[in-house]
Image (cartoon, rainbow, N blue to C red; front, side, top):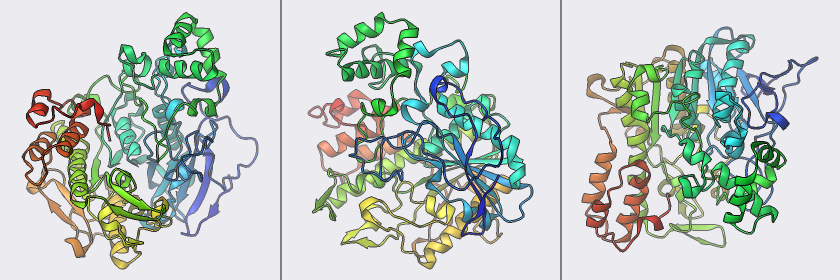
Length: 557
């Protein structure tokens, strides 16, 4: 296999197939090992991203308004960066984010992390959206993996199997693999911890801005009238029939679909192109689509909730783990949203109501921290895992862009820490342009984070970092501390904290907040924070004075 030396000095191999292309009859099937190549493989460029709607966030190079589909179904490739002369180095396998509907492994460059931390870095593609998770009963063939609908998690497991079998040739240690990911990639990292099929394939996990969420088989399979998701497999077939002109409405489409045999349904679905599927979907401003994902099928993923999975060591792969969120998680999605921001000529941005904006950011981020870090950490510690570490990332030193104060509008927003982990600050966030000042404070925080991340990859505990010079990062509960705060000296530096945030605490804070005017703002926040978490209380909602604001009128975000 032919690779190259990249600008960081890392040895790089890009676009390596880790599975057979999931084309033709292999669409909606568990991934198969790749066919051995004849001759030399030139691993010099990233492989195609998996089929998705175009998005500025994914690097697809097209506006989200475009009708074109980016990528290809032939996309199951990975990328490797190895430090010079590596032998038996820890391996860090990155799972990209993007709502499980956009993104690709080429969104990061692992060279600086590989060379700086003396680790082997892998990034992977996995099937997305309706190709990564699709559970129509007509596709079932009696095999639990194929019938799970969890094709993307199976892609990740296949990538881990490839790593086990091949990474020694690239200087990595197959017995020391850290899975790490951000956003959807972090949810998927936790899915690897939950999956019995991934047991023994990895040995540590880093969860950046994640959580554990699964979809029921009912939501993935059924019509919406029968408890299914609006984009369930049966609803997708209905939408295709209407788009074809074969049915005038949903009732007519259902009648056709219910009259088909399984073979007829399969033939219809396999005859459709990615463009025809994605033509049914609206990706909004980011190309991401709300689709059922990570089905609790009982084979790939357990049919249990987060507490049952992570409180019992028999129900998950109890490896050392880092769990973290960013202090201002939702700003990435809010900072260009016309509900919160005025925009002149598509260039000049300003916040409509800075106080309301800050309140929503704070509550939404704290609710994310509760579900994605603190509650999970408590479950895992209760399960007997002594190696649970948590962080909150607080960096907020962006410059202004044409008068728009990004330190407020973005702050410590979702995904912005990725650049610090990989020491790769090229590019920006869509029309907002470059967001990093590229100063010594930024560089120092990046060095510290890389030091912690790679020390964890080596030894299962971040401690004082790989360089031995960092603030000690204590395990959850050690000396009464819980999380480390990651920031520059100008804002308090790196330090341990003892706060524990729970969903119940966030709800109490919201209900008692005297800074918030009565009316719509509090009601909408209550719905967004608690409707989808099983914490919505109708009587409580009425007592807040929200009778005039039906909960179903508010979007999830």
